[in-house]
Amino acid sequence: MTRPIADLDVPLPTLREQIRDLVARQREAAAEQSARRLQQLLAPTNPQETK
Image 1 (spheres, rainbow, N blue to C red):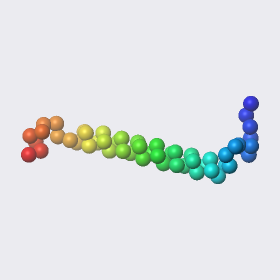
Image 2: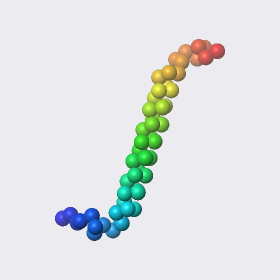
Image 3: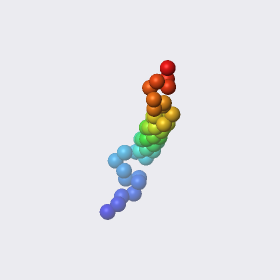
Image 4: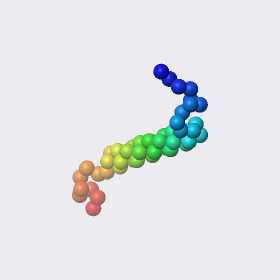
């Protein structure tokens, strides 16, 4: 059984804010993961290349 959104225990504006925060955190985590992968890809594989 589903309830109307108006009957939620959490007010709709609060729910929307929490969803926006969650999406922002997920996007930030994905961007950080992409940056790490890119750094690993571009990192020299031979340690003597850095000298």
